[in-house]
Amino acid sequence: MKFSFITLFPDLISSYFNESILFRAKENGLISIDFINPRDFSQDKHNKVDLPMLGGGAGMLMMPEPLISSIRSIKSEGCRVIMLSPVGKKFTQNDAIRLSSFSHLILISGRYEGIDERVIESEVDEVFSIGDFVLTGGELASLVVCDSVARNIVGVLGNSDSLSGESFEENLLEAPAFTKPDIFEEKLIISEYLKGNHSKITALKRALSLCKTKYFRPDLFIKVAKKASNYEK
Image (cartoon, rainbow, N blue to C red):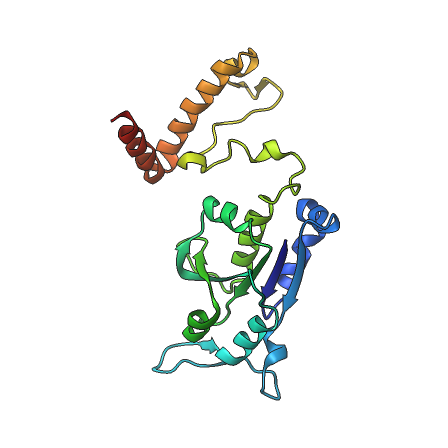
């Protein structure tokens, strides 16, 4: 799968792929990464890519021409163009799984006060937000989406079982997990985990997952409870 980052600051992103799982995925040919800088498509002699917002407002806005030209230079049939913005739909695990089926994702990282809206109207397939907060630029958000999508590509994690029972499956958070030692600083792990009865462990993890979801993410727990209620009917 190919990930193309459209960004004014490729060095902010590139180092992430020099270590660990995504480095191995790149080395093994499971993913490829490239960077397109809108400055390379600027018609300004100083490679300027931003202008003041029309109608007033603080800060500068990325111009449409360099961005659209940079997108079109790599856009091909079947690719998906993603814009990262605080105004977008909240990015979820289901989105990551769905996007992993594409062969090419183009991830646009905005800067300054954002981008000209006509870029989105003309070129973008989906707009995502990674949370209800504002960053100084879209590079971190683009990396989050790339990492989340890439780990769902067959072979990237090595062990496909690593994708089973993850948080947000069925709107539930993962149950608590433990490793050795059995006792650490007078804190014991759940004894049932040590007894080897996998059916009981599975049931216990389900119950703990429900408890954890209810405590940390009541919004998700409401969805689970509603679905269970409809199923019982």
